[in-house]
Length: 294
Ligand SMILES: CC(C)(COP(=O)(O)OP(=O)(O)OC[C@H]1O[C@@H](n2cnc3c(N)ncnc32)[C@H](O)[C@@H]1OP(=O)(O)O)[C@@H](O)C(=O)NCCC(=O)NCCSC(=O)C[C@@](O)(CC(=O)O)C(=O)O
Ligand SMILES: [Mg+2]
View 1 (cartoon, helix red, strand yellow):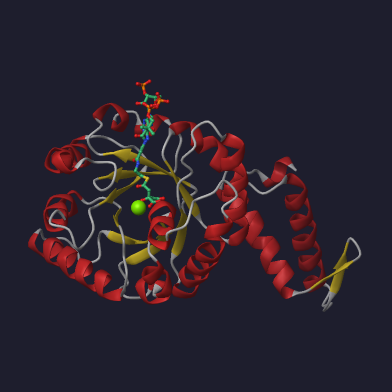
View 2 (spheres, protein in one colour; view 1 turned 90 degrees about the vertical axis):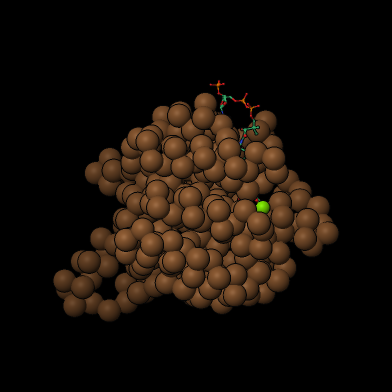
């Protein structure tokens, strides 16, 4: 298991930004060929992406490439160029139905086959960015075993809905809840959308906390300064970790003594509470928490 908390978008036509990617401390990068790239720069951005994927040492970073949409004239060229470079995943924008996934899957498989790669080598992260995509979220997530994540594109989603994106984000509450549940039901990861105000770290933190509580496994970002804030939001509070540890230890002791239901701090503890506590500790350890330090 690897942490997927922070995913830094880097426009694929920015070698200056790309070359610094391994020093920022993010869990992964999203090399963008879609909306961060001007229409006239698509070909040169694609060439730059290929060069970096082949020649540059991204160290431990998981590298995802966001291609242009499956319905654009750039998509096939993107897939043809990028897949042989074996990025960890391709992020497919504006997925409206399982048909988009099947189409992309077929194209990727064909390129993998042509290049002697095992089918399914490059994973697919499906972006839900429209009301139609949201309605089809579970079908999108389960359309192919290649899909390993559902992701929300909040800017496009609000534009599609004809609503405003606010600091509080109430307008995305339903979409977030639906995406996270659809992803979980399909057994894939769920990644939240970007926070665009580079001068509002508090707003970013509150939003990141909320999406962690909803169950998202990661959040995209657009600037290196946002990475630490996202990581802070993903780390459970020390008091919750202490409580989780007490619950897990009490449950282990009860099992040794052949006891059924137990109580911790005056509250009943049953199997789902033990499972939640164990999960919280496991996540915190994945994010660098040392149980012995409590
Ligand atoms: C916003 C800005 C222009 C500001 O630049 P500025 O240069 O003014 O910033 P400064 O503070 O001056 O930078 C200080 C130093 O950091 C370096 N630096 C900055 N950003 C860096 C970075 N990302 N990676 C590495 N390095 C970086 C910079 O090079 C400089 O380095 P140096 O010169 O050496 O000192 C820049 O950040 C940027 O381009 N961001 C990515 C934008 C992007 O990809 N958008 C598309 C994805 S979202 C989308 O499509 C919505 C979505 O589809 C998706 C969804 O939600 O998932 C939906 O529908 O919602
Ligand atoms: Mg978008």
